[in-house]
Length: 57
Image (cartoon, rainbow, N blue to C red):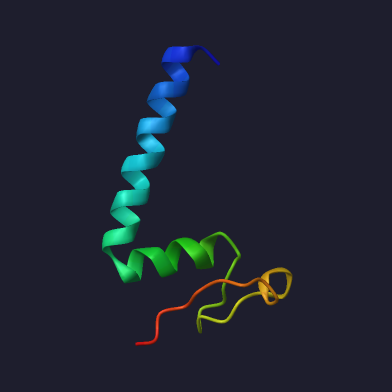
């Protein structure tokens, strides 16, 4: 990967992260598609014992 491609990829990831962080729904959909959480919002087995701060809504 060239330096130019690396910078373009990094910029694209940052934009995607910003978009996801603005929408709770999109964030949850991403985590479900990634296999990190279930549709109900529970962590899947490999992630259950991680220390991750969760919002108290």
